[in-house]
Amino acid sequence: MIRYATAGESHGPSLTAILEGIPAGLVVTEAYVNQQLARRQYSFGRGERLQYIEKDQARILSGVRWGETLGSPITFHIENKDWENWEKIMSVSAEDRQEKFRLTRPRPGHADLAGVLKFDRKDTRDILERASARETAARTAVGAVCRRLLEEVGVKIYSWVEEIGTVVARTAELGVEEAFALAEKSPVRCPDKKAEEKMMDAIKDAKANGDTLGGVYTVVATGCPVGLGNHTQWDLKLDGRLAQAILSIQAHKGVEMGRGFEMARRKGSDLHDEIHYKQGRGFFGKVTTPAVLRAE
Ligand SMILES: Cc1cc2nc3c(=O)[nH]c(=O)nc-3n(C[C@H](O)[C@H](O)[C@H](O)COP(=O)(O)O)c2cc1C
Image (cartoon, rainbow, N blue to C red):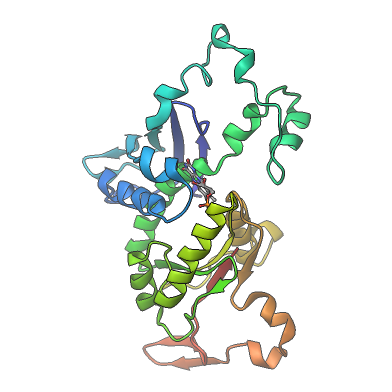
């Protein structure tokens, strides 16, 4: 079984992740992991620290030797470049405790208030530092090695942005590879050029008003083998596991599989792909839509 854990505070010295269950002999380089980390950081928006201060680089401290995994736990270490400005505020030592550093105003819509009450803390920083979405840098490093493993078995992962604020992209006519290639070149990861401009304007407007916007993106996995997930127990089911993984990402509030909530408005006969079989190709659906996962 593949599993991972992350550790580290947003403004602490570093983030760490340990990934277990990757088989031995997989070719992995730090350069590949860092390429995925750079993709996470490349964006258009208010996150100046994310884009300009941190240039995330993962070091692999265990589990890989001479370019290949060993089958042992893989440890990733990502330094926070901004640490020098936080050494006192995030210090391990009680001698550095200072009242002026204490944060006492919980932000709405965040874990701050529930966290200080639950953990009996007097400083919301004790909660927000770990609740922060900076933690996704560690997950990206983990995900990069998992992506490498998937490549070996012919599974490819694609993604692009569908909506930002009220701007909706036109993506239905695009093929998966085309949409992904266009998104990779877009500052808002949107394959629709017209929508891209409107999205950037909407972000600029929100920024000018001290506000933020939400979004919707699509993730597609192609080449998936039959039998992922398991129908025999609730916590092994594929849709359930995908939803848990997606909703655990900070700021995510919804996830749809395939056509998602649209399916509630359609008849069953509209929704189920007819099953066909051809020698050499095996089983396939009449509408060969890949498994689409839409997240908000
Ligand atoms: C999934 C996710 C990951 C983020 N990762 C980081 C990070 O690594 N470092 C950071 O300083 N901010 C991070 N942020 C915060 C953003 O940089 C930004 O401050 C926040 O999303 C608000 O700006 P926006 O309106 O442009 O999205 C992250 C936010 C999200 C939703």
